[in-house]
Amino acid sequence: MAAKAGDVMSGHQEHNISDQASPADQSGGSNLPYTESERIKVVVWGQSRRVFPRFVHHGCGIGCSYCYIDGPADPPVYLNDEEVETWLRQIPEGPSVTVSLASDTEPFLTARSIDIAERYLRACQQRMVNVQISTKCQLPKSTLALLDQWQSPQRPVVFTTITSVELAARLEPGAVSPALRAVNFQGHSDSWRSVALVKPLLHLSITDRHEVAALLADASPDAVVLGVRYWRAHGAELADESLLRHPCDPRWVGVTPSDRDLELVGALSVPGRPIFMNTECVVDYFNHNGSGRQIFERYNQLCTHCGVCEGGG
Image (cartoon, rainbow, N blue to C red; front, side, top):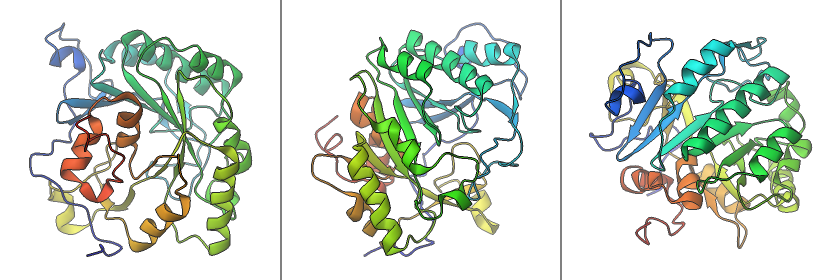
């Protein structure tokens, strides 16, 4: 039976999504004296971990109308160099780790954010972890050079968000146009992957759906992912630990894909281009880090049967 729009996704009771001790503490290393605001956020998914370094104290500048952060249109207040170094020291090592960059702001909007992004990327390369980063800007030349020369076997995945063509200027007023963002999908080395992230936040008109599909057909991203839709938790949902919560803000819970969402998946599906319904599966598909199995086992409604988990990957 098709899920109704607005149904909240529930999962296995053992699903663990929480703020953890710093990776140094987890691995038995030195117990560094991090305060709560300095401690890196770690989300545990079975045997894999997602890590969320920060870029800012507040703000972004893109001003997306659908964003979960506070003050998305406010000017970003970036971490200083000492604060960035504190976060860099806490990034763990190994292929079971996925570092999710820029969950709190746009990473390629200013010279300062680009510097922070590239420092995090270099640390991820050195520690051989999986890394994903999301943007609504064109990738800077310096970042493209870093990605094209990537040396780690864990390939970075860059998600470029394209939610709408018709309404982009209103929904994402500080971002470049979808056509300019799509430049990120053009020819690049095999050392990284460039993926289109389509957020099912609104019911696209037939014209807009065709425009998004045409843009992606011309741009040829390595894959397309329809992001999980979240809504603000209310009442009993706030205390229900079985729900799929936003990894950066547990006040938001995942909504079961609607029939319209599934129709959009069909509209964006083309032969030879994988399509997904969450970013964990994308990283697993390209890097085989095991994170997608948690989706396959606990949130199967987000599975698009890419073959990795069914094949034992």
